[in-house]
Figure 1: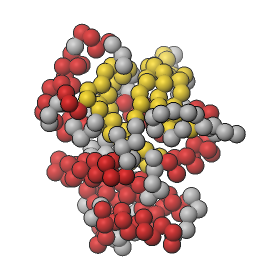
Figure 2: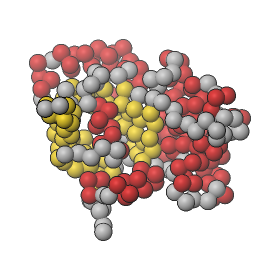
Figure 3: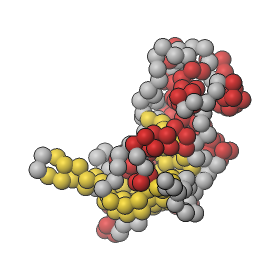
Figure 4: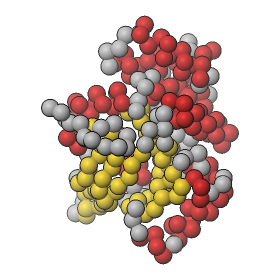
Length: 260
């Protein structure tokens, strides 16, 4: 069955709501969220802990199903796919990076990177050029035979990033990708993400609470109590401190209830 959906944007989220039951109480973790991301565009998502930003990312990744609304990724309506079809789509079109590196401890750097592509049935020889390019771009060539325990935190996150990019995804989704790193290493990861976004025209949605990370984005969606309350565009701030100030102004503004 054809689940394609015509859309000008690479990612289109329309009126998505997700509810969870906590005892006798039903909580709306995400409320009528709508957003769009184009190829080569970085959308940052900021919000306090428990605001719903990670749930929103899981919905976009197809890890959680919405109760209402529609999510279209690269022309495919996720809400109409079976679990198996979602798994295949994630392998081929969606890259995922989390705060936890989730590397297989017994595999080398090279084998960790290749894992999702090999699981999808691709041949190792056919992946050689792509692997070499990622190793060089992310500064991992000299580390390719090492296991994760022999790497620093920043090196492990670079391996996780290469693994997410090996299948040439249309969109990369990252949840607090610098959360386990020191500030200097975190900035290195942000610069690599920005480079991949620009050079490969990969769309990105990066969830973070850190203005220093969000400052690399083209647009930042602000989430409060499950709602996308507004967007901040890159021309509205000059650096991380000015973004942090703008972010606090948005949260404290009486007009914060105006949902985008």
